[in-house]
Length: 169
Image (tube, rainbow, N blue to C red; front, side, top):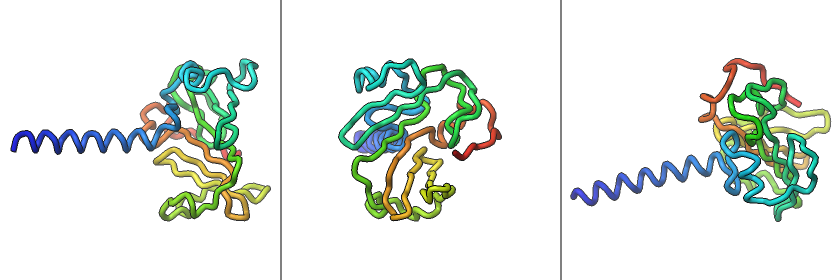
């Protein structure tokens, strides 16, 4: 009986940890927790070495842009990617510009419309799941063009100003 309880506890803890990791990470990179050094260990040298706040890589899915924090509590970044009390060179977000666009239905996100954030002048609509830290850019045709992974709701304790305005592009 004691071993059964111990196994159940281990199983539940493992499931909880897996859930946390899936919600926050992409290929081993966790926004607000991974650094530029971590990214370079995983992907190597970026396509362009320009000492900017964005590193660019080509992967099977498409081209990725990894944005880094310039300074703690930086304000003015779009889509709520700024305002974080983390060291410089910490990953703020990861955007995947897909080679092959994907139909929204293929995402298997239940009640996708609840995440509608806004539509810009190009008719692209942005769907932002703040709990999971994912932003989808969807074209008028219903195809997903970009996926951005950023801070999750669980990262709110790292905010510098809890009521800072969110800037839409």
